[in-house]
Image (cartoon, one colour):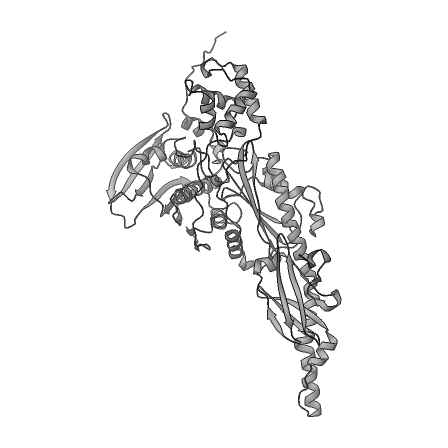
Length: 589
């Protein structure tokens, strides 16, 4: 029988991913086009963010022929120095973020190189790159490919050119793809990216339309600070590698200089607990490393430093979401709920969420969930994502939403936006399409989502009362004045002062939401003084003094506070319209 002796040889990382494109999300023409835009835009946002630049990004998708598309992405970022362009785009796992601990969109140095590799494999066309930094008098134009066998850039041409910008970068690729509209489209990705990055302006040009999304926030987000790894996040093998790279140093110095939250005193305590006071790194055994690692995992360190994170922020998130969904004419926007930092495996993370309720949002469909990780929208694999799982497991019936099937999304006119920011997002795959259901993340999501649920319950109660309130105001503003006018006309008398009649009919202090403001009118016969408390995820109060009969004032509460809170006043229930009587527990606060 003939034997086949297989030839064994090493493969480069680019060769591996060329054979396994689906691992990076390039598993269909539709997703390939989407991923190409996503990776280029993510790089642009990260580059601008590192330098505190307010991003202005232009994305152009052109149909070259049949299923071939040219994708061009340009930004006003810092550009890439000429000597680094080839490796930055032509070598997989080459980048500046892999060894730092701070929040970024990209980290592994795979995304844009994978897009270039896919483009050259499907169309045979090289990629073009234009770059200009602040130190350059001219821009530089590169034409290049990736040598897949060697995981090296193959530069065809580099030439200077006149570019009338201070700094920037532009990349253009031709690839086989499929352009779709609606869900999981390039347009949806850009629109959602604008929500998570309200400081950025986007210009999108598609074959059939052009879209401009102007920034809704004029302040650049805080630049996250790189920190050392937290001891609770290190694996045994990583710990051993760090120590072996510093064999000649004392154990105390290695611990304090390579990990955050480890002072010299803390290092001494850990060494004592591990019985390594007289040990030298060069002679440490596998067993001793395991003991040290277990001591570190069980030691009560301070929480990781949150300066390495850059959440969207409550004010920016509210402005962004209210701007994005204004055309749906929602009845209410919730107050953003922000919690954290929490910790999983030593990695800090925060969660931000906001809900949009009512208006033209479909009432008989599952709630719309918008998922974000480190300011990047997650449009694929919702069923595998921790965010979807956490929303599905909340008992939404107690918050006024129908949930016919347990552990499924509730039904109702609601959009829930959730953003997780972390130094390390535990994605389910290299394609970064869904967040793994890590217990600590699920528990934190549950806390945040219940805060959103309480606000949705308040919104629904207000909606139910709104028709009753408007009916009363219709009586005041239209019916009674019309009756008085008609009666005076018939009897040929002057129109009477109907305010005493309104006072007898109404006899209330009426609260009304008008164009994002909260007004209060005294429809009684006497002057009133009382406290007004808005209670939602937080509490605000204002005192009303000596409100005269038929006097109307506008209170100072913000729209976001009004939308997401229940209204209480320090008066008996029988005297209130559009508010609840202030419970005793609030009155003396």
